[in-house]
Image (cartoon, rainbow, N blue to C red; front, side, top):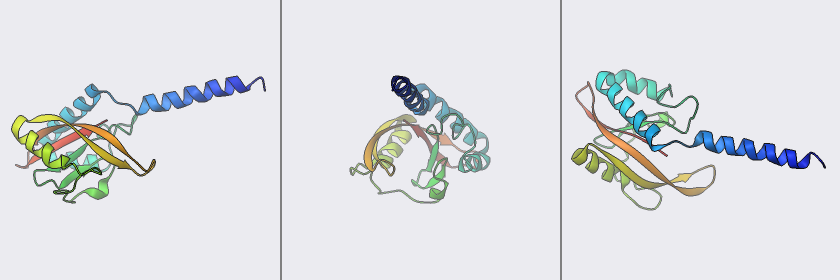
Length: 154
């Protein structure tokens, strides 16, 4: 019984460190998008392959919740670091879980401003709840002559 407070203290530290490790800052998200955009502009095909394999930095090896996704301007998934099976799927007209057409908004803002932030809701299959996501995105001009939306979120 004497060790019970120590057990709870250790459990609290473990839970806190897991939550801390999965959180990313705006600066980390922006840096990942900028790095990925620059890589796509140098070599789109090789960058997409690395993203699909979940290579670091596109899926952060120390914080897997920090990852990148890429859509073309038709809103088709060009690459996704944690859902590679989505490659080639067109998401045009598909809202978030609350009905927001956030991808269309992202595309419009990317074309107009070149970058921005967007809020949307995502259904988390582990918790069975809709959670608020905030993603940063930038328009990239791939070396393949195509334009892409590069995004990451928190």
